[in-house]
Length: 534
Image (cartoon, rainbow, N blue to C red; front, side):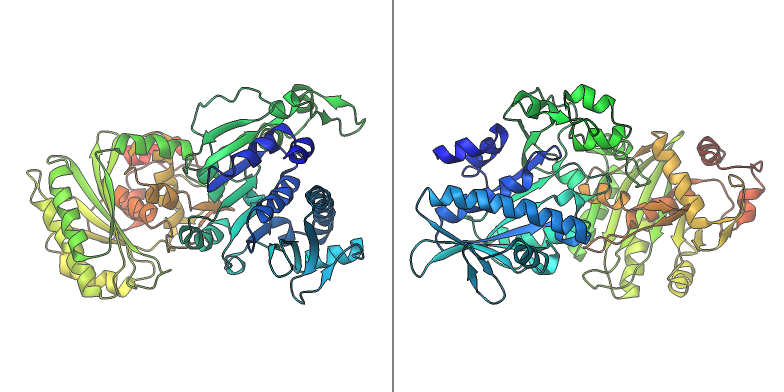
C-alpha cells in the first residue's frame, strides 16, 4: 500500500481506502483533478484483489469527437503506465490486450496502436495471478447495450452521458444480483439540471463543505455515498489552478474572478449542482410544491384492480368534502412496457391555490375498462358533501374517437370538455398565434412558479414534471425509459382548466377570449391573472 499512498493525491487515496466499505460510490470532483487516472489505478487495485474479476470501465469520452477521444487515450495510456509501474513493484504481471483477438502486448504497443484499441473499444488490460487465471478491465462506451457483463462497473464522467438513465437501468439488475459487485461513478455536476445525475448525485440543500485535502463525504439526494472535491479542497492539498494565459498559479477565488463564464466555473471547479437547465418546471418550485403535499396528496401507480380500489378508498377520505374539484385526463390505451400511461389528475381549488390531491396512473389495453375506472372516480367525487366535480377536461389530441365515446358515456354525470392540444390558440397572452398545448403549459408553469400549487410528494411526479422542455417556444418531451411522457403534467393542465370558469361543453377559444382583455406580448403574471378570473 506504500506505493498507492505515494502516487495518489489525498482525496484519491480517501476514495480508494473506502472502496472496501461501500458497494456504490460516486466521485464528484473538479475538472482536471485526475478522475480518469484515479479510476484506472483503482481498476488495477481491484483486479489485484480478486482473481478472475471483470471490470467494465465506461468512458463517456469514447462517444464524443475524435479529437477528444485521442486526448483521452493519452490520459488513459499515462494512467495505465503508472498502474503498471505500481503493479510491477508487487511482482504482478499486467498486460494490455486486444479484447477482440485476445492478443496481448508488452512493450511493443505504440501510442497510435494504443489509441486505435481505445477508440475502437477493443482495449483490455489484464493482471495475471498465475499461468491460467487473470483479472481484466474492459474499456467501453457506457451505453445500455454494452454493459451486460457481470463485474465491477466504473463509469467516468457520467454527467456528460445523455443516455445515463437508460444505462443505469441496464446496470442495476446486474449489480443487484451479486453482493460482491461494486459500482463507482465519477463526474463533475452536469450542465443541464434535467440530467439524471442531478437528482441522483446532488447533495442535500444547505450541507456545508469545509475545505479539506481529502474532500468531503455526503449522502446524495439519490441515496448514494459521494466524495466531493472542489477547487478549495484541491488547493488545501497544494494543487493549484493556473491562469489560462500566463500559467501562473492562482487561488480558487482569483481563478474564478478571471473566468467570464461564472456558471461554468461554479459547476466545473466549485462543484455546484446549479438549477439552470432547460426544464420548464423549476426543481426548487417542485420541491416546495411537493413538500406541501407530503401526507395530504398522493400519486397512485395502478397495476391491478386492487390497486385502483385502494386509490378510490384513499380519495374518499382525503378529497376536501367542500372544495371545487376539477378532473383532468391524459389518455392512452396500450400496455406495452415503454408506452405512455393514462394519467388522471384530481385537483381542488382553494382561493388562488390549487391542490392536486391525487394522480392516478395506469396502463390498460381495454378502452371499456379504462372508461369504467374514470366513471368510478367521477362517482367517488360526486358522493362528497360538496357534490360533483365541476368538469372533466380530456386531452383528446391522439385519442379523439375514444374521447368522444367517453364524453357520451359520462355526459349525464358532469360536463366533459375535449381539448386538442395542436389546435390554434390566438387568445390573450401572446403576440402571435400559438396552440393549446403551449397556452395550457404556460399557465400551469406560471402557477407553479408563483408558488400556488400543491403536489403529491412521490419521485414519479417530480421526474415526470421535469421532462417537458421548451424548444423555440414549443413544448417538447423525450419519453423516459419506463414510458413516462409528462403524463401527470399533461393531466394537471387539464385539471387546472377544469377548475376555471369557462362555459361547460366542448372547449372553445371563444370562451377564453370573451372573458379577458387582449395582450400584446406573453407575460407570466397575465397568464396567472387568467387563472384567477374564473
